[in-house]
Length: 109
Image 1: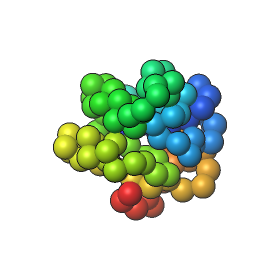
Image 2 (image 1 turned 120 degrees about the horizontal axis):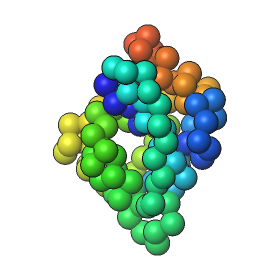
Image 3 (image 1 turned 30 degrees about the horizontal axis):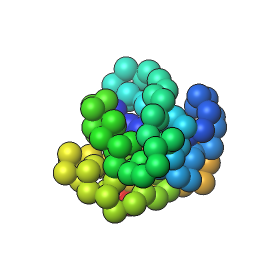
Image 4 (image 1 turned 45 degrees about the vertical axis):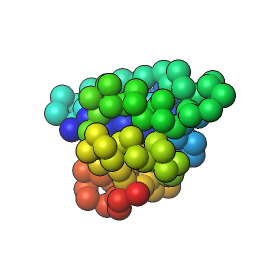
């Protein structure tokens, strides 16, 4: 499973960014090989449509799950159309949210 989480620092122990489309980076964690990488969110500086552009970039990255505190309806529509699972974050770091997902503790967004 390839999981994306919005973060403002390239660090697994950083807090989750509250803004999906305007986040600086997405932490992408692959549960199959245990590798974590960080993807620059080029949409964070656009005048409008940041959520849609960020969503499309995650689709292009092959992500199948997104964990985020919230997102706009247009971004939600893009991810739903791509059959990407959307989950709501818990309080804690990005990696704590990955562990919560694996433990089945997260709810749908």
